[in-house]
Image 1 (cartoon, rainbow, N blue to C red):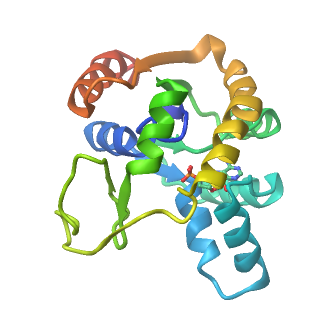
Image 2 (image 1 turned 180 degrees about the vertical axis):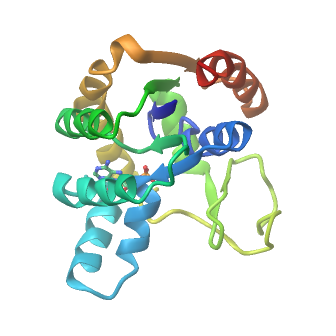
Length: 211
Ligand code: AMP
């Protein structure tokens, strides 16, 4: 079984996705991370992607779908995948469903639910590790990552203009894409503390992954 993770920016998709993937031994495919890697390349495409991400806009469907198709074509047999960050819009949702069907994948969608007010609060106060990209909320008071000691920084697209654009994209583009998965959707309340959210997610997903 594969999982497609949905959630407003700041919902904890990355953090919860890691916990779920670890628990069920799944491979994470994170479009944001893949695109950030491409953005570091000193090429025309790399520069273009960097400026799109920093402005909070969406990268073109062609680029995103090429990355995911390539990933699927090289997937080890027997691996379950947790998709984080795709689809972001209806067109991508339709293309992803076609791709999953083509590869005979079984899948469910998971929505981590938070309010826009909470998302805004988390995005404007969170920091990430400059090295391993672990996300630290406002109540983490140290200046360095507890895993590798690297400096904590603010993500380039966690500035107020880009945050507005990203949350707006979520409402107008991603919410309609989630509708495509309505009959496969499992909802998780993302507002409680992360350990509670994790427990709830594992409880809800355990009977499904084993199906
Ligand atoms: P994320 O880390 O998921 O918040 O993604 C960071 C940024 O990468 C987004 O704001 C977009 O610019 C880009 N991105 C990630 N996933 C997609 C996608 N599926 N389609 C288009 N752009 C994406």
